[in-house]
Length: 404
Length: 118
Ligand SMILES: Cc1cc2nc3c(=O)[nH]c(=O)nc-3n(C[C@H](O)[C@H](O)[C@H](O)COP(=O)(O)O)c2cc1C
Image (cartoon, protein in one colour):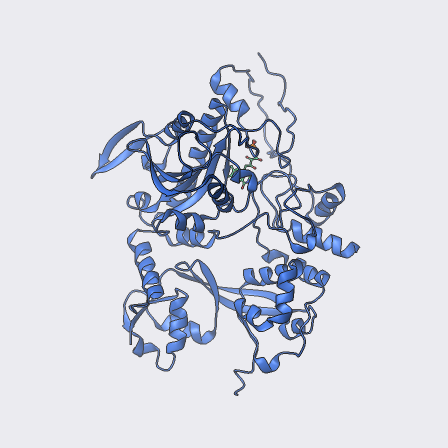
């Protein structure tokens, strides 16, 4: 019998809710009935499972810090034990491929110094195969043409959800008006022009020089410093917690002059692209749409850049650190703003999206998800003149007339 | 067969519960699979129905009733929407009309509203 250990990468919670009564459902009726259950959240699988009282008792009889023989706990319940193992709730030394992989992940998360709450958040909020444009069949529409909500829809929405919060916060206290000076210069103009682009003109490719500029000025290394014990701090155009810059850039190129469509890694050290996979232009676009969770307007961009954090680069220093994961997300946010500004300066349209199928992207890039995980995707291209119908027309706003 | 085997086992998670009802309410193909391969489909949602407890004929409940149940479970609905500023109907759990972050419930509410009107 194999040895077993409870995975420390499991959380439990009790859920008191309602569900449809199943016998009534089978009769074609819908009747809500209370459903109370205990759930085990498996970080190794990125899933949650209902567990019975017997399963819980078995789980709690298995320690998470020592291996024990399954004979000690599982007399007569080896099927239960196997089920718990396949759910990533216990790990075993079984040679089975799936169980071996779960054991490897368990060990990696521990060795790599993940904070348990960060791991919980990261692995339980990762999307796979989400398609936000999938039409419900009953909507009876064809294609993916957009229909914005009409007035009646919106009125109904507001009736149900209540009035939306005001755009600006009201904070009580003494009021001190600030000088408002109109600034001129490239930076201010670029800031004013920055916007999210959702319509691209495929007829004109992005040039290799433009791509090189965008990648270099966003992700390129401008300076290095050995800080301690061989740890090298990196200087880029964006800040990064601990000067670690753990966020890697993986360009997915669909339409760039002189560069074959495909999936690449941006090698910061040598300012070069390393090919991961060659693609046709159409398959690059399909992949782009899939990785952005079915947002076809982003799938049409000339280049996407998948932003993936190298967790050990951060957690080697910030060991089981409560704030380390938040810093990774902020790093990605800073890179995305710099990316957007560089693109704007070059006259390219740009975007960032958090609605991404990270699990699919990691698989496609051949990443070990416990060591490198997708946080967001940015992209750019030659913007078309027309405004996407998903964008509101922003009316100019100023708190008051500028002083000068 | 002992009593335990004859019981319906419901081990559906809160998120899957919402997904099951949403798909039953909105996807024709899913509804017809519910009618033809009931046990197989429910098993995928961790609901185990012993063969001898299956009615001879299964009919998917009316969509309006399912949408009402979904609205009642509202707190459990999770969004799968992009963070676009305007709401478009093609997005099942669409983005919000007023804010750059989406609502989880909008589609269900709109659908329910339509169901109530028809
Ligand atoms: C973190 C983050 C995630 C975003 N995700 C999406 C997305 O999934 N889809 C999308 O169309 N826009 C996305 N946006 C863009 C916002 O909708 C956009 O910034 C907002 O509407 C304001 O428009 P502007 O960028 O043109 O000023 C995202 C923006 C941020 C900062």
